[in-house]
Image 1 (cartoon, rainbow, N blue to C red):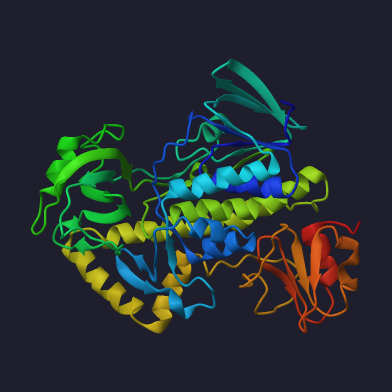
Image 2 (tube, helix red, strand yellow):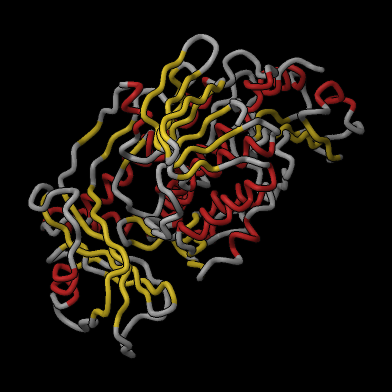
Amino acid sequence: MTNPDVIVVGAGPTGLTLANELGLAGISTVVVERGRERSGQSKALNLQPRTAEMLDLRGWLEPVADRALTTLPRGHFAGIPLDYGVFDTRFPYQVGIPQARVERFLEEHLAEYGVPVLRGHELTGLAQDADGVTATVTGPAGERTLRAAYLVGADGGRSRVRKELAVGFPGRDARVSMAVADLELEDDPELPTEWQLPSFDMEQGPTGFLTPLGDGVFRYIFGAAPHGEVPRDAPVGEAEVRAALGSGPGFHPRLRAVRWASRFTDASRQVERYVNGRVLLAGDAAHVHLPAGGQGLNLGVQDAFNLGWKLAATVRGRAPEGLLDTYHSERHPVGAGVLENTRAQGVLAIPDDDARAMRAVVAALLATPDGNRLIAGMVSGLDIRYPMPGAPDHPLVGGRLPGLRLREGRGLYLGPGGGGAVRGWADRVEHEDAAEAVLVRPDGYVCWAGAGDGLEAALERWFGVAG
């Protein structure tokens, strides 16, 4: 194998999305994955509205949605319902789909670009210099060295790439430990047949709840013990699952088998820098948090959409100065916001009189139009706005433009004039006639709008000098 332009470490949803974006841009890419085969495990079960929009940008949502199990018309904040129907989006709902199905589509789609996934290969060392990155990987045939211009760590919360960089990962240690399992259960008419939002017993804390995954399999999330009572890596045994299923009032499902189980915590940490020379971090390698509100997979996939086109332009030598650094300046605040809101959700789930009082107040606020819109925009990702230096003060600038299709991964100029205004950037920016002039980045965010001066400066700011 010849050396690639980019090495992506990790074949989860973040790494596979990034590899697809790079492949779409014609960048030679290889994905290095420690697991020998797809595990079939699904830590996440949803796509938020903004993630659905971004997949739809590339024409990837329809084949993904074909593999979905359901849609959920609402989101939630610590189990308090959120209405997504107030937003201008074609996807005012969550797509209910196991993470493994998303990963399968993304990995299969890489074949279209000839991007290989080296399964059973573990990163065991890396070094960077002014010209590139040297990665040492160990696989079935032994140790080998790969050389690339850039390397991206998308290898999860215990990222080897992050540890090799020795970059700061500040935050708060875990205080609570919970468990998640996929179970085969005995048939019973009381078993749920539809997906529901999480429920909370404010006397006992988060209650165990079941989500049907089909074929007699159910996702079960249970337990809320102080962290440290059970070791983080301790297996979740069948006896523990049976005890949880049999606890509390009401219906007690009967267990047939545990297909998969794991523990998770409310640890909350974020890497200091997403861009570290020629090594970048994305997804859980850059941020870990309580999986409250169903935001984790979505945050990582959106990291990849933000990074992909910028890294491709940099590899090609067409990126304007500082473009790659905007990956950090744009995505770090978004990640920090998710860490903050998931910590707040954790507080609202504590079985405590003060937390119960706070929960009642928050629920009342979220029942108002303004309160719902604020928090629903946060959890769904639809409220994200990026700073666009030098752009005019226009209501569209910085935000997403709904309903677009950017299948080729290029920018888009909507405006009059038959495309003459962007002729020098025709290899990077497409044109469609429209009454109002708007310039959109490849990730679907508006970087310039209006009828005044500044279009050429915006083109150079985001797409480099004219060709």
